[in-house]
Amino acid sequence: MALTKAPPSTHNQRKTRSMSGTGGRTAALFLTPFFAVFALAMVAPVIYSIVLSFFAQQKSGLGFGQAKTSFVGVENYIQVLQSESFAAGLGRLALYCVIYIPCMVGGALAFALLLDATVARARKLFQLLVFLPHAVPGVIAALIWAYLYTPGVSPIVSVLEGGGISLNFLDNHMILPSIVNIAVWEWTGYNVIILFTALQAVSREVLEAARVDGAGEIRTAFSIKLPLILPALSVIMLFTVIGTLQLFTEPSIIGKATASVTSTWVPNMWAYDAAFNRHNLNQAAAASIIIALVAAVLSWVVTRLSSRMNKA
Image (cartoon, rainbow, N blue to C red):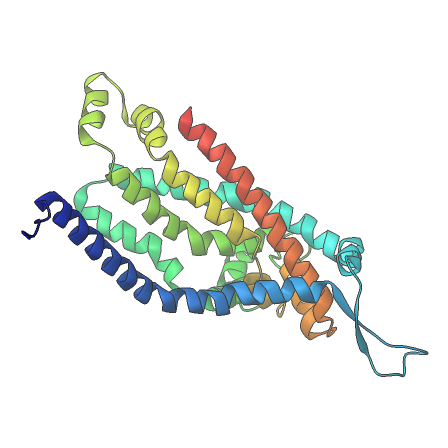
């Protein structure tokens, strides 16, 4: 009996499927360590925090007995939300967002547009000078500014006093703008680089056409460049909102130089104080989940608004 030879197309299809199967197994092999670390470092702690937030340590009798772990449902969440210090921290954080986000994003956009309009020789120098503050770790930056804010040792305060201006950057009325200034100083340069990179991707032909039509630099910036870099601006807004809700380092360091910043000044500090000072890990977990939920909701709002702006 003569053997029937498979058509070349069928043979090629089998070979392609075999190669794709091998490629999938290879990809899975390389991705397994990432997903394993991600599950251990990210997913597992989140699940543990959620479980922990529904329990509490309770003592029987007059409180002298051994503490027992009991399921309390949403009681920890209720106690956190009813806490005056936590509510005050949320309000303080909201005010911080209102001041910080427009200042930082607006400043980054202005610097990026200026860099895009400067001559080629000056660009690299200005990029380095603008980005340099971001290279300084947050703790070091907060320590530097704590020194610059402290009366008696700060050269800035001394110069202002020499000009007849008495200003205490660490009192209750100035502490929030002072912390906003530190964050703006740290993060503006990082976002300038992102926006400047997006501006470099804008077609030069489109810009030349706008100039031929008589558009000046300002008109070109707002009518041509800004609409074309909205996706990059949306990404910056999303990460800025998420990062703002994680405010912790700057007020924690500044708090060591002034009594205006308490241990529960913002929600993250409240959770830290609950966990390591009041030894109430369950309430700390509940506070962390609340912060994460707020971040998720705000991220969804920013994403929706950004998508509408990009479609418009």
